[in-house]
Length: 60
View 1 (cartoon, rainbow, N blue to C red):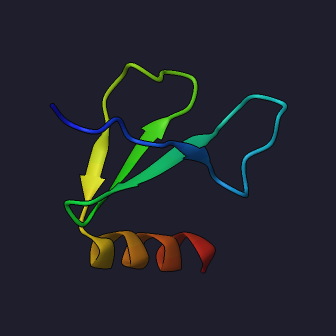
View 2: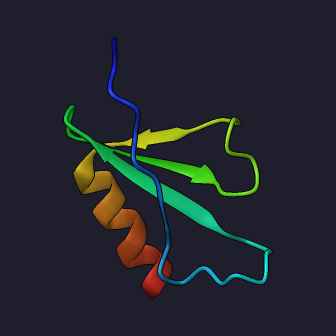
């Protein structure tokens, strides 16, 4: 049995709806990303280095 992921909203997300993402980390050294409006939808799993690169790119 796998442990359920603990999702949290991006600090850049608002409570007003719109474009929000949620992120969860897991013991398998992956970062999971999903659309907060579609909790049972697809999940993107990234290596920590890929997540770091993505967040650096988004902030620039």
